[in-house]
Image (cartoon, rainbow, N blue to C red; front, side):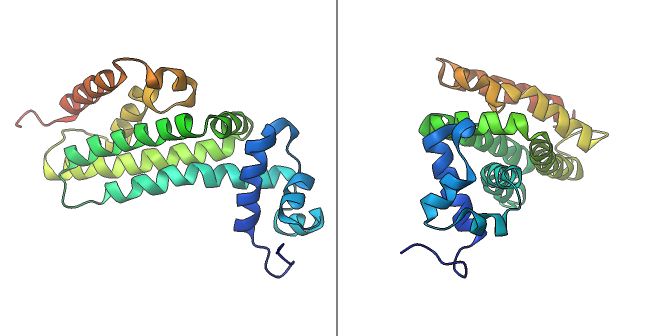
Length: 199
């Protein structure tokens, strides 16, 4: 049964939008397509999202947030020391990006286009991720595991140094032979660079 204006939620609209984007791609997907998929008028969709751009921004943010939410649990995992948290966080980021690219390539390609169009959403996502990394590095500095004068700068450097393993422009490389060994080598090098000389 199609939703009524009372039961139609922003979340249902975003779910339908994702499916429409998967089917039609960002160039052809319209608000009318989303409304049709939901069995409502396009005016009902516009009551939740005032413009097509706002809808695209919200669905892109939702897609990116899935990754940052998945990683957030690692940041405060007190059963792991900061080095383990850093390694696990970077591995989880790489795995999440590979999962998105490999398991749903059409949607991944669609979101790559949308993130290029929606720079603000991407900058917020990167700020969230580097903020998570900063908290891990700060914990390491506090425990003496890491020797860094500026944890935020160190976190940004770690993020940039590992971009090959999470930036969508490198997605074709993520299934290359030896990529896991290369990832481990980069992370090992970064951990040695952060580690306190006394360790």
